[in-house]
Amino acid sequence: MFLGTHTPRLDEKGRLILPAKYRDELAEGVVITKGQERCLYVWPVAEFTRVTDAMSSAPVTGKGLRDYSRVLFASASDEVPDKQGRITVPPALRSYAGLERDCVVIGANTRMEIWDSAAWETYLASQEEAFSDASEEVLPGIL
Image 1 (cartoon, one colour):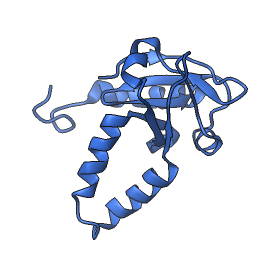
Image 2 (cartoon, rainbow, N blue to C red; image 1 turned 90 degrees about the vertical axis):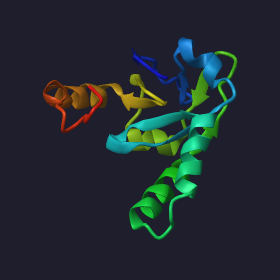
Image 3 (cartoon, helix red, strand yellow; image 1 turned 120 degrees about the vertical axis):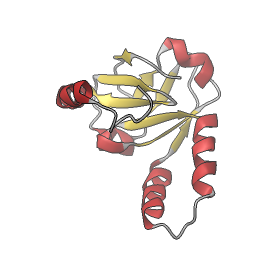
């Protein structure tokens, strides 16, 4: 489970240092993909495989699944962290998420997300009220 908010910076080569507390779990590699709201998803390989297996068992006749799969897999990049815990974020993914220097890495349960720092602040500010108002309709039987 990935938790918390971290604020690494991209270096001049497009590398980002992963949060230290997750490095052991991610040492075998990660898959970086486009995420919703112009962030990037960072999946441990095992979790990406689980998601892939679940998608593979769904019928390909569903247009929504086909569309989502195309974007997800076409944008995916597998990376192995170096000895310092850095991963390289490919240029196309940096461009998609508007990543230049200051980033935010958030824990999102089974994955991490990488956001441009300003984009994250804007998103978070816009979601605070919705979070406060979350009710049984949004999270049925959970809270």
